[in-house]
Length: 266
Image (cartoon, rainbow, N blue to C red; front, side):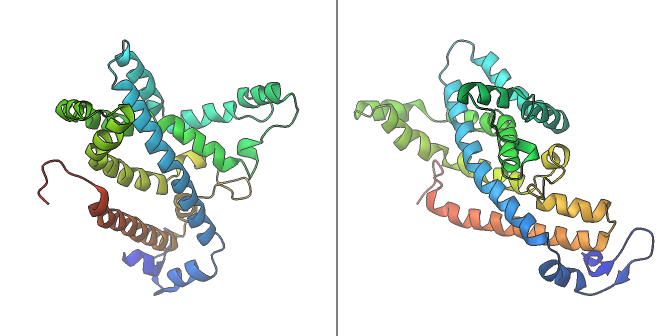
């Protein structure tokens, strides 16, 4: 914490500057607010889609169909791929000139026009979100949802069936309420994970083009290990810590209204 109140370049001794780092952050750092807004935008898009996709994948794998174990392994493999390797792979997939995605788009639309993806400021964020979804839908979130689904008592489904509930009614009135603790848990972890996005942008886009993917964690890293302004990077990290704390507190406070814990006495 004290480092955030100093000017420190790892060569010269730290020099106390008071709140100067925080004043600079909010007034003259032209990348502070844009990096924060980009990070919030990334999280706001990725987390709902990743949660929904993971839940759908878990429901599919919970049907007890033949080959479920094989499909579960295939779904989980992208999550095991190192982020650097994934970024290189998706860099080729999204290559504007020879990438398979743009070749398919040109074939379908019968036009030479196709997105620039990681080379285009308007498409770079979309590309990173698609890459993150590829690794997220079959990852730990899906396995946690699968465990939650398998923990729903079958007696509840049988009672709902006796009352004439169909598939959608069972999902709405049995599955979703029983899964709310799992959804809450995955949402908290998902938001924290999305807000600290770094490696994908660092490898795939280097924060570009034109700062289109300059996320907050990348801003901290650049100030610390490129400009060697450790004091300012520490101040940025403290703000990031309080942002994380704030969002987690809000989620826990709101959870009392919609999270149902089986066996809880009201």
